[in-house]
Image 1 (cartoon, helix red, strand yellow):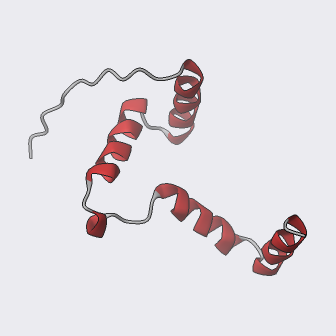
Image 2 (image 1 turned 60 degrees about the vertical axis):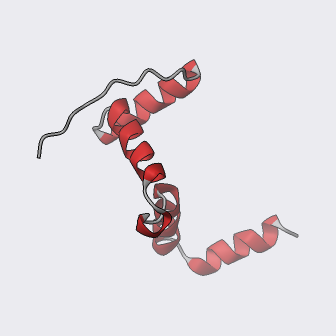
Length: 79
C-alpha cells in the first residue's frame, strides 16, 4: 500500500512542543508520528475506536498496583 503524505503546520504553544519532543524522544517516535496517531484516533467512528491511550495507561497502572492501596488513597483523598 502506498501512503501519500501531506504536510500540516499547526500553531502550538512552545512549552507543549518541548514536552511533546521529550515524550517522543523517550518513546522512540517522532512528534509527527504522535500527531498522526492522535488525529487518526479522533477521526475513527466511535464504534471503531479502542480505548484512548490515557485510559489504557491508567488501567495498566491499576493492574500493576495494589487495588486496596488505591482504594485507601481515594478514601483519604476525599475525606
